[in-house]
Image (tube, rainbow, N blue to C red; front, top):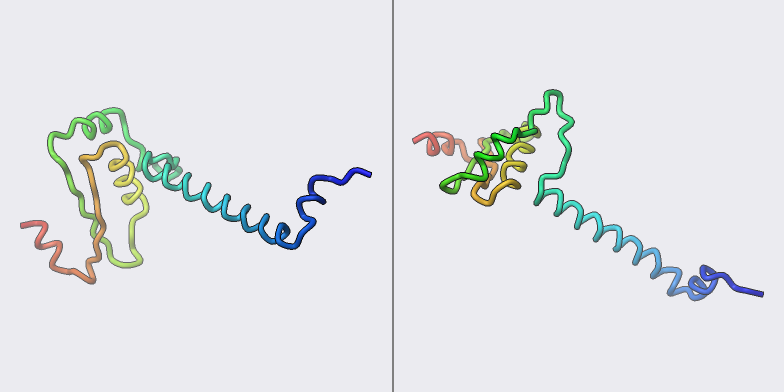
Length: 118
């Protein structure tokens, strides 16, 4: 009588515990790798109402030919972050290394807006 591979693999208690743990770890690693690739290359599709985070070829040209590094600061009130603006800034940052951005909290640092404008 032939024994199946599954029967042989799950014969011991340790194998029955380690196999699901290894499977979960593999799935977590795959998910983390795809998330990192998506962030680095801005692979997320734009399903917004008016395609606000989609860039034209002209925008990509301008970003690739930036003469100096550009740092953008997005000012948000906690809980009122703009997902479309965040997506757009992430896409800009993925196109070139000369464009970086950070977000800051207006409630925690109210004088930041005045500092940036002067």
